[in-house]
Length: 278
Ligand SMILES: [Zn+2]
Image (cartoon, rainbow, N blue to C red; front, side, top):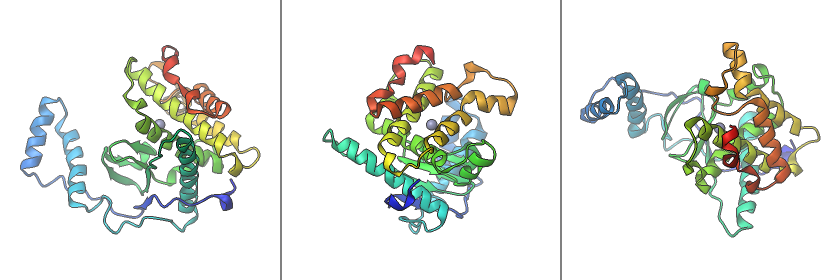
């Protein structure tokens, strides 16, 4: 990618290297109320304590967005790369929204190491990058970039950019309200949303062409296939069970990224219209 031509986003929250502290051992009145509520909702006490641990960290402000969390521009190569890609998503989507008289509100990108607390609960780096609608932030442990290369066989700057653009795609869904669309089974809904985020990443790629080097588009398609449910299942459990897909197959993920790229518009991404085939 032509990093020298890309503006760095100021919406990066660098929480790397910060200790993640749970305080689930203290049981207060609030905790007991939550445990009772959880009991009636059928949640296990363990799951509830996990949630509470994260919530406590939030209220103490120890592990979550401390006042001194550096915002702005990370100076290391990986952090700088992430800020550049986020900046390019901001520029593309701001322009896209402005064309129809709308204002794009960008998400914040949180960089963390190992574990993080978000408005959606606590998360481990092992779960991969994610978007939390509750606080409108994208979370990533940049170690995932190395994993893409070494474990998933999807190297290259644009493979990494695709991952961030996909998460920003979930932010667009939140802004546009597509996450509230109904009329599908849970599996169809999940797959439709994930493929739509891939498609939005494709639309972004089309509009970010000026910073993409020749041949780099292939890296995103390779990454899309590498994180396809069938690819992952074959690797982790040795067999493919389509009924349990959550993100779509390698073919579907490539197809929708390409479709977004070819169409170049959000309207190209109506994965819900084809939900019966998902
Ligand atoms: Zn996703």
